[in-house]
Structures are given as structure tokens and as C-alpha cells.
Length: 548
Image 1 (cartoon, rainbow, N blue to C red):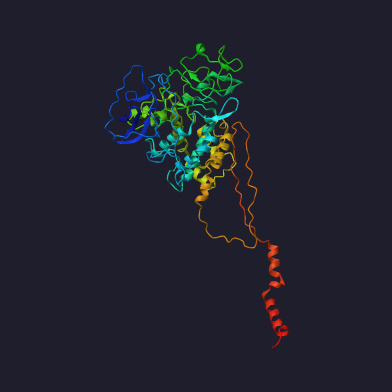
Image 2: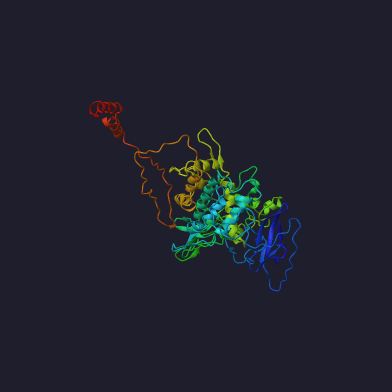
């Protein structure tokens, strides 16, 4: 569990697991860690703070000198998470090594081959410039406030390197010289989808974005694109118990809404159904809710009872199954069952909006998304049947990288399939009745922008070339002239305003060799025939050479 670090006036604590310190956390200015509540909070007026000694389960931790890569605990759902919620703490970002940090100096050397984390850190400026970018209602770009490099790297260190108590991690293949590029491609696929789901809008909660006959229905809280989030239970059998129970009396209001003028209000849920509790639609012309009659969403809902399971975090993790899995692997449900979890006092099922309202939401927004990708996308697999080939995420990832990271343009290419697994949950084109995943082309263009222009992964493939079976002799008769015009990249016009690059084409530059006709002329020339040259020499010696 969490333990206060002595000598820090309750402003620092560490996380103790199996007798070892795994994370060190700073509460921030004006906050102190309350062991009874399990999170950092403000000191009440007149309140005296008696800092307890550190628990003896872990060795004493020296007072830290820099911001650690950690994920602190926030309020439990019994308390209003907004009453004691401090301003989000933005700790300065500095590249973190793979053990407790020893220095806050930025990396100046080239990334070590085999370390995905170091390579990502070396691309910090490009990631912040082209990936962690949001857009206002006017279309102007600005650095995202909800999704920062600092929060991303802290979460990635835990979810992809240190681990979070499960038998799987976010696949980075950290330290594997031959496979870490696979981890970077996996990271690029994750980011390309997160850009579409949340980063571009700078939101944590899902927005009311789907129109029904030109109007935004209030019951979109229950599900958009024809989905019913409260009915999306885990599969019956070994995972059914992971789903959150639906509390029809739960009342929650999302923290995010659109930035355009008279945008629909945040999604919300509350008890009540039937004629007295009909929901209407949002009138964008007047900026108010019209409730003169029921107005159904695509799935036919005209109320919002039990509809508290909209998306949250970088991937808009939604549904009672996915949120229930977070509660089991990361939150209170797992801790109650004896698991070692990152957030043992956070009950994501009882208060699902805690992903966005937590005092340390900067990391939590990333952590929940990295978990969903690790648990649901990376472990996706279909078996081979008589009518279709099997599909395994890691196999397809390796196939894509080994093929030079040039995706096919067919509908079932790697990034298209991966995006479909995220939503609607299957990999083949046309596999879902709800239709194709929205903004698929943007997800695809984001993906190739990240691997080609941001992470620059092609250079890593060149650093570890595969041996060839035989040497190829270079031509010597004429030099090979390298082309001066590079292949032209296709650029999509904004909305995103980013340099969106389609996958590069495989262009084979063949060495220039002599023309076959020219070779024939050279070999047939009398001046070059060996017998004729010998005969000429003999004639010269016999008849032309002066005698002594």
C-alpha cells in the first residue's frame, strides 16, 4: 500500500509492493498525503497535520529530489471528488531511465538500440508538436492540456515496463533488440487512435457528437452509433463477473463538452424512466434542451436511467465490461479480492467519472487507455476456420514490421483491422452491424504520420539490416546516379492540420547496367578480338619491324 516518506512533511509517499518500493509520489504545492483517505488533499483551515511514520513493510525511502514517474491515489467515490480536487499538477517532464531516476538532465546521446522508451523520449518535441495537439472551435491548434508528454511517459513506464500486477503489459518489447521496433509500431497504433478519440478535442469524457435527424439527442449518454453501453457485459463464463453492476439510481454528469458555440451539454445519467422522465434533444440554435416530447437516440432510448457508462480517457473506454475490467485490474474491485492494484481505493464502477475527476487525472487518462489497449487489442485473436484465416494481433504486428511497415491499401490492412478491434470490436471489414469505425481514414493517416515522420522508424530498420544470401557485385562500367526527386507524399487537408503522410511505396532503385546491345557491340568489335590482335602483332614483327 501507500506509505508516507519520513522528513517530507507528508508531501511525498511511496507505494510498497511485496516489501519493495515501486513508485514515489509528490503531492504538490499546498497538498499533503492523507493515509486515512489514500490521496493527496488540501489542508483545512485550522487543521493540524500529524505525519505518521512510514510503515515498516518497505525500507525507508530517501527524500526525493525530482518528480518521479508514478501514479498516485485519489479520492474514493464516497466523497465528492470535486470538493477537494486541487488544480492539476503539471510536473516538469524529463526523460526517465528504466530504474528509479538518477538525473533530471535530458538525454543528449542517441537512443540505445533496443530501448523503446529511450527512443520515444528522444522524439519528445515531435510528439508534442504533431501528436499531442488539440483544436479549438475555430480550428486553431494548441498543445493539449489533458494529454501531456509527462503524463504519457509516467503511465507508459508503469503499464509497459514496470507492470501493474497482471500477466500482460502494454507491448513495448523493452530491451529486446530484435523486437522493440514492434513495440514502437504498437505505440504508434495506440496514439493514432487516441488522437481521434480524445486528444484532438482535448477532452476526457466522451462528447455528445452523433446527430439523429439533425439533432443531438440527450439519450446519447446511453450509447452512440447504435450501442447500449450499459448492456455491453463481459462474455459469460470466466470473465462475466468483471462487469460493473448497473445502478439505476446513479447520477453522474460528464466533465467534458464541446467547445463550439451552443455545443451540446455534457453527457449525464439519472434515475427515472417512462413518460415523466422522457429526454429530448439539444437545440443548437437556441442553446437549450427541448423536452416537449421524447426524442430517441439511434438505439431507441428516450431516457438516461443507468446510462453512466460513456467513454473516458485517451481511448474513451466505455461500457460496463471495459470499465469493470479497469476496476478489477487497476482499482478497488481487484484490491478487495486480494490483488495488488495501482488504485486500491478508486471504485471505477461506483463512480466511473473518477477517470476524469481524479486529482492525478493527467496520468489516469493515459493509464486506463493503455490498459484497454493491452487487455483488449493486444490479446485479440480469432481462430482459423474453414471459411476464414485466424487473426492474431502479435502475429499481424510482426508481419507488418517484417514487411517493411508498408501497409496494404485493402480494407483489412493492419491499422484498419486494429482500429476496428477498438471499435466496434472485430477486425474484418463489414464484421459489425453498427458499420465501419468512424474516421477510419484519419486513424490510418495518423498512424503513418507517427511511424514515418514522428518516430522515424524506418531509420531503425536500417540500423539492423537482415543478412543477404549472396553478395551483389556493383557495376563498374557506368556509375549509378541516385534519383534527386524523392517520392511525393500525399497530404490530406485539415481538419487536423497535421502533416498526414500515407505509407511510403516500396521503390526499388536498380543499379544501372550496360545496355545488352552495347555489350554485344563491344564484344564483337575487331579491335577487341584476342585472335585478331595476336595475328596483327605477328604481321608487324615479321614484315614491319626493322631488321638489325
